[in-house]
Amino acid sequence: MISIDIVRNEEGQIKKLYIEGHAGYDEHGYDIVCAAVSVLSCTAGLALQELAEQKGQFLNESGFLSIQLEEPFMHDGQIILETMVLGLQEIARQYKDFVQIEDSGR
Image (spheres, rainbow, N blue to C red):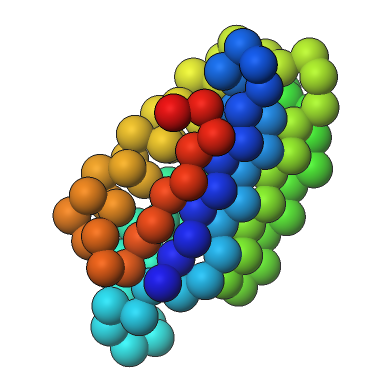
């Protein structure tokens, strides 16, 4: 199962995000759930750094992604992250046995 943990500050802004695990929907290389989560999270991480110029620590390894933002939180960065969360929520809705989301602010 893929576990997603979203940590927000008091204002509801995303400050940390962790994604860990493998979906187990299909065998390695054919798992569309893992691929969907990977594409969304990797694209968001790149956009945070390249487009929003958001400072933070970004770690992406097999089966693990960590985003820890530094203040100030950029408005564009929050839009990127909230867009990613919408996509992840839809994947979790469609594949609830394979993706679990915990969101501290929702």
